[in-house]
Image (cartoon, rainbow, N blue to C red; front, side, top):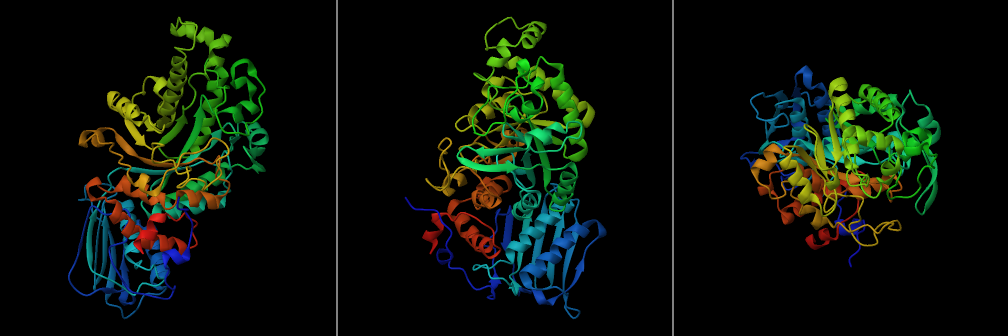
Length: 537
């Protein structure tokens, strides 16, 4: 089997000092509509003026950065006749829609909102990357583009629980994802292996549940957490790139780190160690214990002040049989079952206890903090609460998840393990696989992902919420490895979530994305090189 590797020779990278006229052959995601225009190219050194309302000051700052990075322009030409105009056009039909035109007289970018203008600027930047990804763009051919997204949430999920991602390294992820119009970062802040967010009401979580030694075969010290001030700063930083921050607090499973600090959270008040392996623990939050709701209520009260995003993720995965054994024997849960009218004594109706827990927490989130709850879909959960967003994630079980969303008139985030688990290797042997033997998700396999799942326009209109790529870190042991696993497959995710299905093609994507691989290399971004690019030589 061909190996996946990074090779300057294979990329045939050009010198940093080369320059040429850029084309539209390197746009990812591919726009809704674009056409080459007649006339002479825009010579970037002729830009003498930038027209921009005050409300687009943030977008102007990105524009100036790009002019410096891509064209070497740090000071506008006083004698230049070309102009760049950024504007708001409320007639556009989507908040993220934009129009872009480039000719010898300059650049015009209009968006319905500042986000649309930002995405127009990101497209302009790609137009300044020539086929050899040279450092300086001299001129760009005339072009017109009309663009709008297929879905409105295009997300990467990062897991700092298994392997901690230091704050400054976490920030590095954001500009790269925004470059391709990904607009949400989902932080998996809680799991069996660690609690990573400061909760001032419960300092024990930081004192007891943020440090351990080992993640499966990686016998290394792993520690760290994010302060609330860091996360507030992170939210502001992400907003500059029009990226929202979605926090995840797991329940009722994957909570061993919290249980380690507060044994009363689980049935029987067991003292349990922080988990140092992957897999599923039998220790769950106890739905029959009022302290569970007091604890979660205090956690979400503090997080609501830190994360203004209207979405919050509640986990909900891998808490079914056989992990529900603890609920079957717990006296408090037996009493709760009786109160709820559950007469069975086996595990078959235990899912109703999870529903009870979720109903209470969801009500708190909605009534007190105006949040929209999200959770990982499980077939044994039986129902999707009204107004929630469910995630299709389990490999091979996307169809029942999609059908459940349709039946419950619910929104669904598409991140099926069949395509969107970017912690999986792109080739056999490409990463440590000692814990459970991860399946391979090749570059071409990922491109086959259609978030519409063949369900037609009604599903996309009524149920499709967005797309997500997951970066679970059981085997991702460094921030560099996060980039290696995420790129270039995240470009495919971005295109799947943004571009109309009719405009997408595998061969076309390879040609358009190759210059972007060169660009990643020139900018020092770690990534895994798909062997498919070899065939383009």
